[in-house]
Image (cartoon, rainbow, N blue to C red; front, side, top):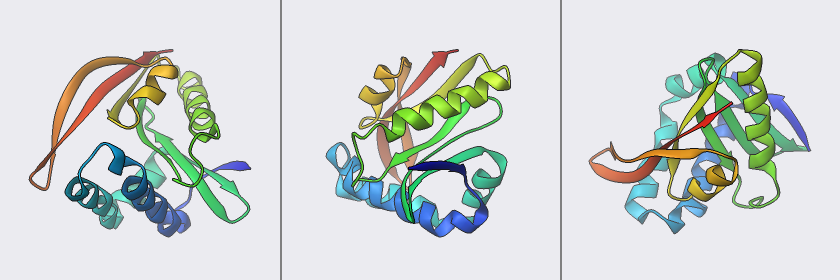
Length: 153
């Protein structure tokens, strides 16, 4: 297993992992209509390419297989955290969060913020994040329940 920084050339694989994770993992907590709308957000290619280039965006690979990804902005917003439905529970997300936290510490960021799905909430709590507040987010006319969480570094 290797961890490396993403490049724009990885977009197709990133998009596939994003879609597959939402459709196969987040379906446990969200409706079929919600996961369809959410997973289609990856079609905004320019937005995703900006994320890849502007954020510290990491990929976890085993050979040619992309198993997970995570990203954080320079000011401490943890934007992406997705692990393949085929590799849940193997410590991939933990490894990514630790690397992203190390990046934030190097930049002297003292607080990491993240918007967390119902599915990911238990993981982030185990990683030391606390709930700031629940929130409802609108996407294409559908309402998604999630949480604003943070961690003091």
